[in-house]
Image 1 (spheres, helix red, strand yellow):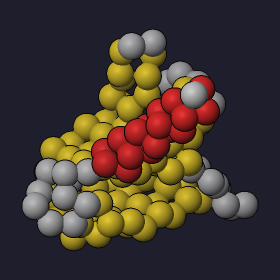
Image 2 (cartoon, helix red, strand yellow):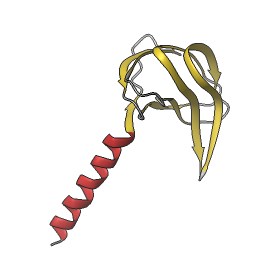
Image 3 (cartoon, helix red, strand yellow):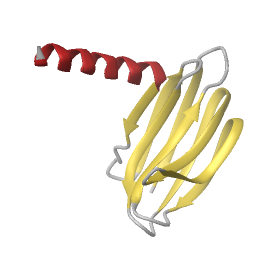
Image 4 (cartoon, helix red, strand yellow):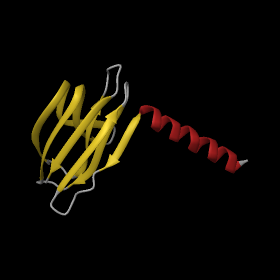
Length: 124
C-alpha cells in the first residue's frame, strides 16, 4: 500500500513538473560559459538555475523566435527577488552582478499560442 501511494505521488509530481515547464541546472564550461537552446512550448516556461557566489558577475544574452516574458530571480524564504524583469521581448542582453550568494534562475515564459525557439548564452 505504501509503495503504491509513493508511486502515485511520484507520477503526479512528475506530471505536474512536465505540464508547467522545464528547469535545467547551469553547467559552466571550462572557460566559464554556458549555452542552451530550447523550445518553449505555448503556456510553458524554461528556467536555467545555478548557485552563484556574492560579488561574481554573469554576462547574459538571449534571442527567441517570438516575444517571451523574462526574468532573473532568486528565493529568500517565501519571497522572490528579481534582479531583472522584462515583458514580451524577443532578445536582450546585460550583466548580472551577484549581490547575495544564492541559486539564481534565468526564466522565460511563453504566453503565446505557438512554441518559441530560444537561444541563451551566459558568461562568467
